[in-house]
Length: 436
Image (cartoon, rainbow, N blue to C red):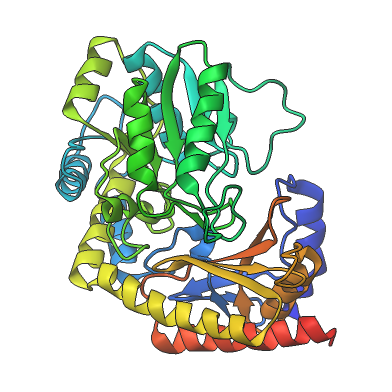
């Protein structure tokens, strides 16, 4: 008899909780520490999604716990017109990490940060049209939801006026090919913007993009794409907004994913990893854009704008990442994880592709490599088998591709934990593929 079957718990959950997306796992999580969460039976479950892709330092990191206790004892929340030292310190620290983006607003969630960024872009440009990728996820509120195309489009009425979309480049499933069969992303980008230009009313305000589309199936923008995208924006007087909710704060092996490309966005949004599991987000922009927004009366404040508690946590996150060399560790651990995933690809026909960067990697499951037919059912069975063996992974299912596992353990993950995760994956794929 498992304590996870507590009838009173599940009766209450099934009666009172709104169902908001995926089915709930049939376990009761009692605590978490490091790279593991623990269920009601005390079973350790290796967390390869860092919570909701957020617990970049693992669970209950002692420095974070100490900061929360200390700040709660001082001041946690203030009137939105009041400032505290953690807020100014975090803004200063972030600005130092992203030269050119010296102005910072601290908010709560990724959707909220993207709402503020889009609102600012519209105000500064005097336009309203927003372009995003067809596999994007930027949040479930207002303008952010209108720029989200990977899910949640049907049944909610019209999106915001001027919402446009282009395909994201996909090297595994290219829409345009060069002579050697590789992805011709430049032709695809040119074609996409020709279509945007034909639809626009002359009011293009911004393009919002993730450097690696996570909910879109771990689609990485190829080297050179971001610079080309920035040129497209500049030619049209658009701002480039980069959403680094999942790629920021070291996860890709650099502090921010855009650094690899040498392209600085006009507006950068951070969330998830910045708060290491607590609700914290940031909108960063240039002095010139902030000044223009201010002069036009930029208005965006929320109940928890500039709250001291999450800001103090954000400062601690940056301290720990720097002190423990976690950006470099993301590269080293990511290489180990990638090598293991590539080994799985060599062994199992159903592993169609391995992609991503640092500790944000994707494993695409297909029926077979020749047809690349989506292996949704097999992917679901693999996920069930990994959970049964003590590994939590998340799979996204999009019509245009196979089931893609998003693999993003904490930056603090050990080599032994990576090896154990790979071992469980191997066992789970073998069991699911053989029907055992």
